[in-house]
Structure formats: structure tokens, C-alpha cells
Image: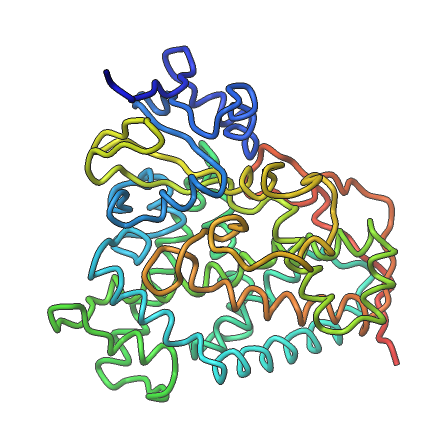
Amino acid sequence: MSNRSQIPREEGIDHTLSLIREGYRYILNRRQIFSCDIFETRLVGKKAICMGGKEAAEIFYDNEKFKRKDAAPNRAVQTLFGKNGVQALDGQAHRQRKEMFMSIMSSNELDRLTGIIRKQWKLAVDKWVQMDKVIFYEEVKEIMCRTACEWISIPVSANKVKGVTKDLGAMFESVAAIGPTHWLGRNARNRIEKWVGKLVEEIRDGKVNVSENSILYKFIRYHDPYGNSLDTDTVAVEVINILRPLVAIAIFINFIALTVYHYPNETKKLERSDEKYSLKFIQEVRRFYPFFPFVAGLVKNDFIWKGYKFEEGTLTLLDLYGTNHDPNIWENPDVFNPDRFTTWDGGLFDFIPQGGGDYFMGHRCAGEWVTIEIMKVSLDYLVNRINYDVPDQDLSFSMVSMPSIPRSKMVIKNISKRE
């Protein structure tokens, strides 16, 4: 007698429109309806398995069971990831390419990055105090673009910063869009890849000099598992895989500003707290607010998990947002409470705003440490280093649009420096 269980199945021909309509809560809603952390559906005309929760994350990040190559839809490749990037690699090729990214996450590099972001915040505030109003999200994207280019050692002229910022933002702002907005994202990626690729060629030809200790030079000099250097296009894609995520941290920083405004009691705690409470606050922002909704993989080989059969080649989505709001993991998950991280044990599969699993051997985002350090500096500025007013505006944010940001993009006025 078979011990195999039937995966709960969503009836219907295709549920792509439901995914678009429900956004971040699509998988979580059905997990609650089925009272099960796994269900089967059809997306873009194909069978798909959706799952969430700690145990689901642990199996999803088992490299013997799932692969990433060809898992992401082409629209995401054309806007968000680029071709032949680290996200689409598996096995030895992925591990070695991932080492290239992890090599720049040293304490020295993170300290240097912290110095750069502090400088860029100071320069931005110097400008903001002269402005009638600041559209916070747009301004912070530019702060992050300047920071990313300086950290990597990409020269960018003052008159080009806004255009580069806009293009990098378009890559992650258009990934779930359809029509003209999606094509804006594609065109933006093409422009940035061409710009970075030209710089790579000029460095290789000796026309432009950069420090051998720079991140850009390390990427140019990288060799694959077979001893071959990366072609220009792939170097450009991987450099953008630092630029784009750094600019995307503006989403988290915007939610920091929103939280500081909506939770004044937490702000008072931050003014008097040590670094430990600031970190708990940041982690709760990353858990509470929507960032990435899910990640995709393909079943590598047939296997059975909890009695459910996973067939080779099946598209599988892991619910990031829903796992971060899973009541089996988090008490009162829809309540903002930084103190919940006092007892969190640092698990690799229960808190996954930027993916789960191991940094070095798996597909967890290499830039998570960078995100936290940048959020620390940004929180310090918003709480301790500037005063500002928040005028009446629409501060609601969508649980459908991806990425989600406050609809007003957080307008602030009357900025002044604190003594």
C-alpha cells in the first residue's frame, strides 16, 4: 500500500491572473485555505508547486533536489537578473561564482562601504535642507546608486547619476509589470549592460585604470571552474548584480522611514537604545514589510517529501513573504514587534526576506550583510541626525504591486540637521 499523499490542488485551467491580483499573499492565502504548506496550481500554462514555511524552505534550498537554471521566467531574466548570472547557476559553477561575491563581504569591505554610505547620507542631507520637499524614495535610490558605484569603483559623472539611478531602479520596479513599464525595464537593463560592458573592455584594453584591489577589478579577473575568464557581457551582468540590489535597498530604507513615522514609541526606544535594539528593529522591518514575494526553482530529480511526489522539471515557488508571516513560526506575525528577535535563534530557514539556506554553498543572497549595514546607517540618520516633517499624503502600500512602496514615495519637508 502506497504512503504517497496527494498534493492539494487548486482547481482551474490557469491561475496566473490570481497571482497578479493577490501579489504577495497569493501563496499564503492558499496555504491557509488548504490548511497545508504545499499546494499544486497552474501558472503561465504549466503545472507549479507552491510551498512555504520553515520545513519547505529547508527542502527548497537542498541543492540535490532543486536547481535554479531555467527556473526564472524570461521576463525576470530580461529585467531583474540578466543572462548567465549567478542566480541561474547550479553545482560547482554556482559555488565558485558565489565565492566571488562572498569574497567582497569581508569586514574591511563592509567597513569601507559603511564609510561611503555615511558620506553619501551627509551629502544628501546637505542638499535636502535647501529643498522645499523631498521625495524620499527617489532621493534614497540616488544615495544608493552613488554608494554602489563608489564601492565597486565605477566612475560615474555627476550629470549621469540620475539616469543610472533611474535605469537601475527600473530593473526591479518593472519585473512584475506588463506592457510599456516592462519594456522600460528591459531597455534600462540593455543600457546599463552596455555602459558597464564598455567600461570592462576599456579596463581590459588598458584605456582605463582601476585599483587591483577594487571590486570591479576582482570581477574582471575572475575565472570560472575551467580556468576561463568571464566574457564581457557576463562580467557586466554580475557587476549589475551588485549595483541593482544595492539600489533596491531603498525599498527597505523607505519602510524604515515609514515605520519611524507610524511607530513613535519605537523611535523613542531607538534614541536611547544600544546597537542591539537597532538591529532588532531593522530585522523586524525586513520581516514585516513586503520585499521579494517568492523565489523559483525546478525539481532536479523525482523525490518524495512528506509523502508528496515532486516530479523532475516541475516549477516550484517558495513563499518568502508568507514564511516571514507564518503564525507557526512567528507569534502575531502581522504585528510590528522588534522584540521578537530577542529570542530568535538565527535560523537559516524561518527568516528569509532575501532567501534562505547557506551563504556559501546555497542560494541565500550574498548581499544580506550589506543590506543590514546600510539599513543601520540609514536608521541612525532618520532617528538621530536629522529633523523633518511628514505632511499629509497617501502612505499606504500595496500588497499586490511588486515591489511595494508607499504610494506617495514618502514625502518629507522642513529637513534640518540635529546638533
